[in-house]
Image (cartoon, rainbow over all chains, first blue to last red; front, side, top):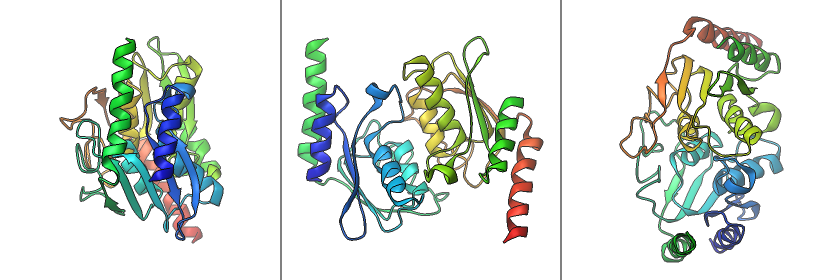
Length: 146
Length: 146
């Protein structure tokens, strides 16, 4: 989570919503690290965790991340939660809960849905205070600048 | 839908699941056309409709496709349905219904969920027989070759 938090800080420095993610292989070795890139790439789907999964899969030359853990500072949205299922991630660890935009423990809870065929394990709330604090500071500064 | 069906055929010819998509601007002019690229790019998220939305947004230099229509041969999965919300697509038109993997009229129905803040309009079942037929032929051939 330390690495994901650093990626989130780095995203904020680029003017992106501060969310960071890392994909670790079965031995805990980082395969890919990413922060949000929505603004800089004009890509509304360029969320940190989706980028980290894509890059980890590309590094491996396979679409499957079956032994891997996705660590992300914010509860994944429905898009990213469903992507973790497509990439067959083994475990998703997230920091802050997202009652408004989350898709795992909130909203459509796509992984819990009976139609979801491969469920990653989920651990939420890891270093929640720091992850949520980053987001709060960012949006407070944004409102201040507005 | 004709263009999307051609993109789906082209995907099949590359060994990809035959799904094709096109994004049209408010005047009906195509901004981006894509077929599935999951296998060739080792990217489990490289679904036709997600690629088409990313490319359309990049072509415009904005993350928003507020006046746009996404036309896709198969009901979008939860990931792509949620991505259509992020890209603020105005209308989603799809061909075949997908009771197993769909995320709009099946599964977690992410766009219908109360947590979904911006709902595109949805029209399903357009040229459904041809779109479903393409998928059936592809999977029949795959089983035959297995």
